[in-house]
Image (cartoon, rainbow, N blue to C red; front, side):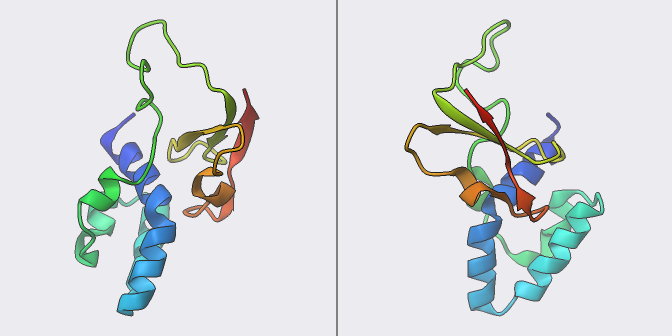
Length: 122
């Protein structure tokens, strides 16, 4: 996964919290402009440069493909126990596992594409 794809997934994962935060600050319009720019293939770093988003927002945004334990070892793949939620069209690479009875990642919705996440049962 490229750095920009990872940033897209993290940006998408952080959008619910960012929307709430930016609405309180009165800068929601700038966030919407950044979302449109990212959807138009502008690199995420460039699109969010003027938004004053702390770096930890992207670091704590949630799991993305390749971050699961064991995913980097050749020939191994973690076995999920529950459901796997994915970006609806694979554009950003978002992937999060949900254990049985656990919380639905990102509310079950791709905030960047404004579409439901794809759900794959384990």
